[in-house]
Length: 308
Image (cartoon, rainbow, N blue to C red):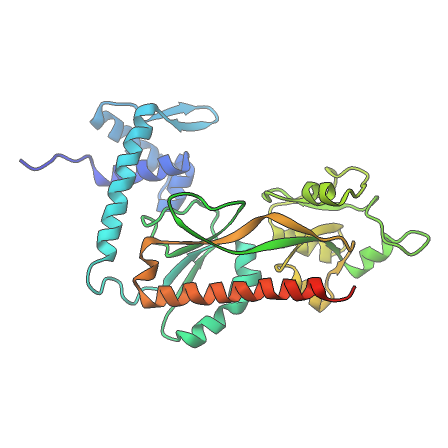
């Protein structure tokens, strides 16, 4: 007698909602409405005769039964995805799918991507900058680039490079920060904060011992890109992150507002799907991006040795 399985669409809703701990984020990922996800999971709970989620005013969380069931469902979907990828000639011409943050994509990855295309002219690349957790191999991504203090167990992580923090602002705003001796001071500066950043002004202030009027005051924005744009408009001082801010410093749109630079505790990591070593174009992309990252480290070493 064949096994009786729950409805597969409902299982997909459950896997995404369990991974995100959110019906809304699961719906966005699966391109359906949150109501469809909620109703699908209610139907699944009724079919199974168990409660999978605790519904609370502030959100949802997995029950103990739901968490246990999620591990089996996630593994099942992963096995299906892996088996599909291993089929002969499966999706041989599909693009290389990369997930990364929007500022990293626009300021580091995309400006270098033409060099990869020169080596692999027939290979297309898809860059996804949505703020969502990527599940390998279920979500179909080949690589993800993540900012983290350390690799996460269970996936293949390779360090690309770290960031270097240095305060930046427009040339005009820098002039307004100079004291009677012509020395720029951040004491009365408007600091531009990035809400989503794991490291921001507090890390730089603690590392340098710099005194500011109130480090928590100032302008707050959602992304690093917006912080750089706000600084270039003369709205305050942003925490520049090399190498992402390098092109603004080279063009003169931004200048350093203080000479002290601080190495970040986090780094960018390349996270690879399990099949990255099997497809030649994936191996080529991995080797290419690691070579590009090595050049960043080399440039940072040269800057550190240059006379000030």
